[in-house]
Length: 307
Ligand code: PSU
Ligand code: MN
Image 1 (tube, rainbow, N blue to C red):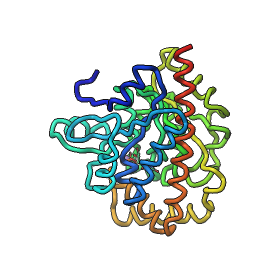
Image 2: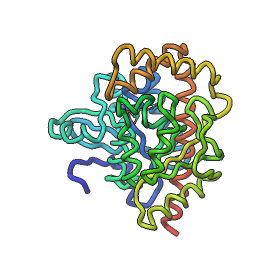
Image 3: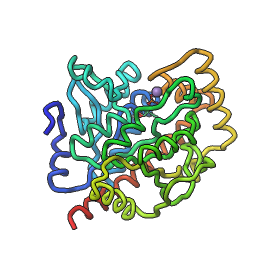
Image 4: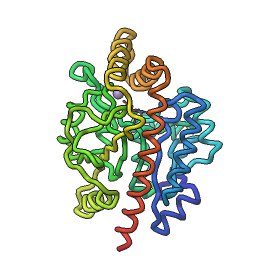
């Protein structure tokens, strides 16, 4: 076991017994949603994972320790502190750990810590990717590199068009990351079910998702897999409304010279402001939907591993 890692007792027991565990990220809590909805959502997501037969492991860095499994108090602390907590990507981990600091984990670091703990399935809302204008800014999320190297399945609702979706898919292809559509041939665009871009494969059941991931690892290929799960129809947004808000947010970020790790949180907050909170409701519902699918897939994966 990694000497920098603390696995919560319930999570450790489940892993030891080969029971399903689902990892959850914490940047979505601190930087992705406002308080108190962030904390309410994080706790509700854990409940949904339990109701669907798996054990939740929310991941973060607390006092310089890598944590797989947080207490409700720790979740509340991250939510209340919000963006005053460091957003921790791969490059941030050594310094945060060395200095005994706190960090909210992105998709990248959640995958890393999940893998250290032995967790194979991770549910979130959206991933980082190749940003619009990356041909000059070179702003490409570390999430894509991590998907290429770390053997964790990430269940998300596709990617927001704050990103260049076409370039994001090209990057994933180059790095050998399968992009799966759950019950769809089209890449979902987070707030909407359609993006105009195709996925690599459509898979229709949690059992078949588990099998594809199992075989990838069993073949020795390593690396992650991206499962894109469309937002339920009843919670999806009007494409014109959300795309206008996204374009305005991207233009505002450019005008204010926002860059680096601030870009994604700035865009998310701006979109929420421009859509009067409707986007937050959709965001919460799609995370719940992903948690259900991830729990079922983790259950199918542990059944496969035992067979
Ligand atoms: N996209 C969302 N919500 C989020 C994030 C992305 O819709 O909360 C967060 C995730 O933690 C993701 C991170 O890993 O932003 C990506 O940040 P960057 O683009 O700086 O790599
Ligand atoms: Mn970036």
